[in-house]
Image: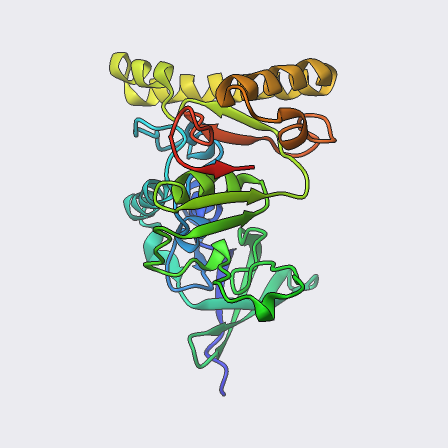
Length: 317
């Protein structure tokens, strides 16, 4: 295959997801004379929020801090579903003209730096026929995330060859998969699991969450009542800014409290779990990690939808 004609831009952004689109918008605002392109390995923008299609996919951070400071989040839910977030990203790209700079199906293979020329040479492949593409740039901005988009991590489980049921990886959720009346086991208890379980429990006959070790789970409202009230009373940009800083400062306070008073925060979290679950659940075994709060990330459960009190459906821990 012949190499396409070499091109030069000031900045090459790799990835057209949340970070890549945001980087392009900031670049246009701060350096309007810069030339740039975005190489996206897939055929669509949105990154994580386009890739993941499993039931109930949503943010586990509030959208006032996860969203863009230059474009206020105006949806009622601060813990938003994946489809709404994807629309927000693509609308932002279109409004700022960033979508015209995206080169889809361009997968970056390698990059090499030349000190004498002060530039990067980036090799990529384009399309299904893997047409080679070479581009030179002065700045290379990697916004490709930490997932392997082609194959999510799948452990080896003994006996899978003899298993007669279906094994599904959330990263590659089949379109139209129906679990109605099925018995489902969700392996793991991180952010993906606490999202999947309530969604699957709506129709499945039985859902079991199988975990090696527990995770800290914190319930919070899906809608931010203070943010929604501020938005009704104040201009959108001002209301958004106030809400964003409120959430940033609260998150910092909770994190610092967890580091300085871990046992106190642990009691608060587990107390909330006991209140949400009610009697009959072994919180000490199933919801009490061996580590301190924020040694690992805490899972957010909007409206406490993981508990039987918020949605009556068969569950087992």
